Image (cartoon, rainbow, N blue to C red):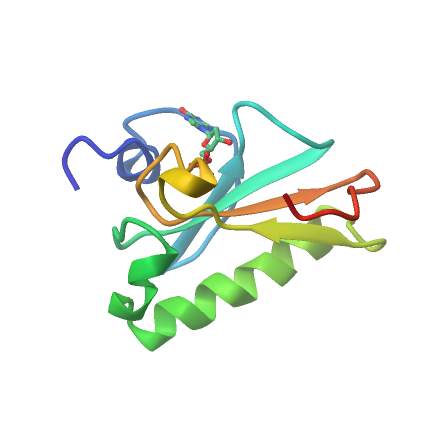
Length: 113
Ligand code: DGP
């Protein structure tokens, strides 16, 4: 999608530190890490947020969810990790292309907010 930051990253027009890629999804290190490991997993097909996730085909959904576990294992997050998807202004979503944050490598707060 034109003018979408993450579409440009997926296309290679903006550089990123890639950690995983398959036919359906792409993952790269967050530019502003909130944990020792902070990775963003995105579908190659543009949808704005998790509110629109039902627009994605089943094989893409399957790949996205599967990628999270593969990346966590690849990154050595054997003691656990957190997955977050911010959706819309109340959740402070800043990039309107669906993404899952994988956060790990430290003890997370026991509060979600
Ligand atoms: P969210 O606030 O949930 O929409 O998360 C967007 C994340 O995207 C935020 O943690 C910072 C990250 N980000 C923004 N611009 C770039 C960029 O150009 N490169 C990378 N690697 N990450 C970015």
